[in-house]
Image (cartoon, rainbow, N blue to C red; front, side, top):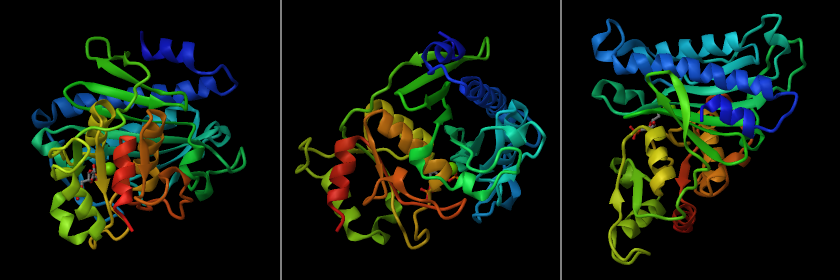
Length: 328
Ligand code: AHM
Ligand code: MG
């Protein structure tokens, strides 16, 4: 079944369903382009490597970060259903401000290419996105308040994983569904219906290089994972790709926990609340998992700024709860 067919049969019929489809259609169009570029990256001129600048967060931009950002922004502009966007690669939000987009219902927040430091070594990367209904007046430009909504207000969220196959994983609040790109037709086909995250597993993911720098409860939890005194009576396996979207996808399918806590180099965590933590938290919860800062639910945080960061404990419900029990 194609994504469009699935959407037509499952998305609640309402006045906004055409607009939501336009947004999904824009995401698939841009992701097919990005997926093609990634596949041929080392063969194309001017695609691999650093752009030579930094984004607002002081991180080196890869050329493909910028290429993906432009591809998604162009597709969102064309969709006619989006009034403005916020992206990891742009310091400020962008209000589209055409006559049509000023009347559009939705804003998108997205990370065009998550894990992009992995591109040059041919490891999976992804696009993460989150869609909200605007709060600003119709007919006017987008305002910051459209983007600073708690994750509980998301209309739609998902990611595209550019892995051994390209997959789109989506939720609109009634379960999580996965679609695989058929490279022969460029259509996304339903391959994973109603995905459920196992409630526990013996896989943990964390940049353990940071372990001495974290609050002590985190080292105690990792010791628990590595011991014989845990619920599996034997060491868990450590798995850390360094592409959040790929690490999360593994947890969604096999179960597991991903932790990125506060560290001195990133005192509020490394990951961005609005376009990394919130969309994945919405998916995790819809699949029966959990997403917290270690102390509070990610989706209930009231954001104060566009590029706000948050610590992230995400994955199988029992594992996230257990990890939280180690924090004072
Ligand atoms: P990015 O969006 O610039 O790629 O940064 C986010 C990435 C995550 O995908 C990944 O889990 C994390 O940063 C890796 O950070 P570290 O190298 O500190 O382990
Ligand atoms: Mg990212």
